[in-house]
Amino acid sequence: MNPAQKALWYIESHLATVLTLDEISSIAGVSRFHLVRAFAAATGFSVMRYVRTRRLTEAARALAAGAPDILALALDADYGSHEAFTRAFRDYFGVTPEAVRAATCLDHLKLQEPILMDSTATDHLNPPRFETSKPLLVAGVGDRFSQEDGAGIPALWQCFHQTVAQLPSRVGPVAYGVCCNGDDAGNFDYIAGVEVTDFSDLPRDFMRVSHPLAEIRGVHPPRAHLDHPSHHQHDLESLAAAVRLPGGGRAQLRAVRRELRSAYRQWRP
Image (tube, rainbow, N blue to C red; front, side, top):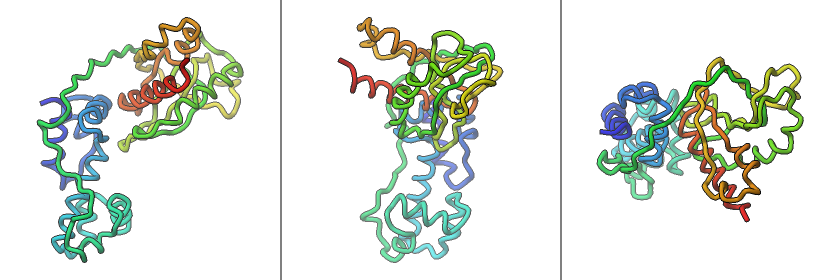
């Protein structure tokens, strides 16, 4: 089985127990960052989002069958209170748990059935190429995004090009997209910036990130960029590389590249 299939098997067989991304990735035999990327490519879900929707689906089935104790269902679904469970249930299904129990049917609910292990996508992900860099200090403009919605990332690069001249102590011509501070829900911080020698003279509104060692992964723009010499310097500078620091996953990098390609298609000649 590939990592996504192993993860699906483990999730479905341990749905009633506490599950963490670290535990699931360990069973799958890959890093948490690789699993996030592989699972999303195979299923269209982030790992923990799939866990949540499956648990809510099983809770809905139990309610339709007349389960008397909603708090017990909430705890079984890994929610800390009746209120948190009700809020998540209503956000996903559009009705309250009490309404489903009273209706005793599931006809109008969007249930998430188990994804069969043999129905996952057969795409073979290219082996990731990572290189460990020297100690890295990056400063620039940034914001927080989710794996499902990174539509604001191209605007960050536009802002970056308008403000990069204000960055003192810049090192070299290469710009970096930095994914960091990721969480199990697929949210992450993204910084469009450049390497600097130190942070002492930075304007207050610039974000900064540092790490003794960082893993650099090359991110190449669409081939059309390379076919237009007039765009060559601008695009290669802004899309030259992406940096994954601890807490920033490969699926996040994938979301970043998707949004940048989308932006390119909108403004290319």
